[in-house]
Image 1 (cartoon, rainbow, N blue to C red):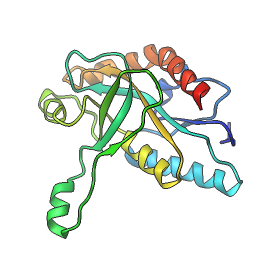
Image 2 (image 1 turned 180 degrees about the vertical axis):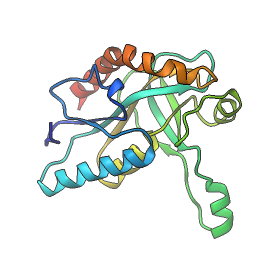
Image 3 (image 1 turned 90 degrees about the vertical axis):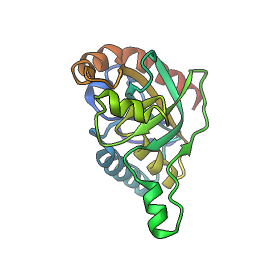
Image 4 (image 1 turned 180 degrees about the horizontal axis):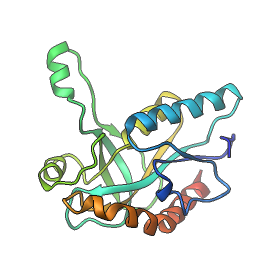
Length: 196
C-alpha cells in the first residue's frame, strides 16, 4: 500500500514483526540495520513527496533487546541514541559538537524507555551492561528512522516490544519472540493510528 495523505506510515525492519499490523495502514518493511532503514524510508518518503503525498506520522514498531534484565513488555521510546557513533571523539577532533541523543515527545500511555540503536545485534552481557548506562532498550533501526522523519518534518513515534534480554541467548530467542509478539505489537500500533 502506498503512502497516503492523512494516514500514518508504519515502518518495520523485518517481516516477522509485521504480522499484526493494521491492514488498512501503509506498512514499509525496510530490512534490518540503520542503513537499510534510512535508505528505504528516505526513498519511500521522497517518492511520496514527488506524488504530493505525506504521511501524518511515522510509527516505527518492532522488537528490541532489553538492557535491563527484568524489563519486558511494550514501550514507547522517549529518547534515542546511536550507540556505535563516537560523538565525543568527533567533537574533540573537530571542535564542533556532535549531538547523539534525540528526545521524542510521547503520544501514548505506554511505559517509556530510552533506546540505543546500532548496527550490532546485542547478544552479550558486557555490551548490554555498558549500553544500559544510556538506555533501557536496544535495536538496529530506531535512531535512523527518527533522523529521516525529522529531516522530512514528519512526527515520529517509536513503539518497541522486548524480544530478548540482549544476552548470550538473545539470537536464539528473537525469531519466536518477534512472531509471537506481532499481534500484541499490532494492537498497540492500532491505538496510535486512532490518535493520528
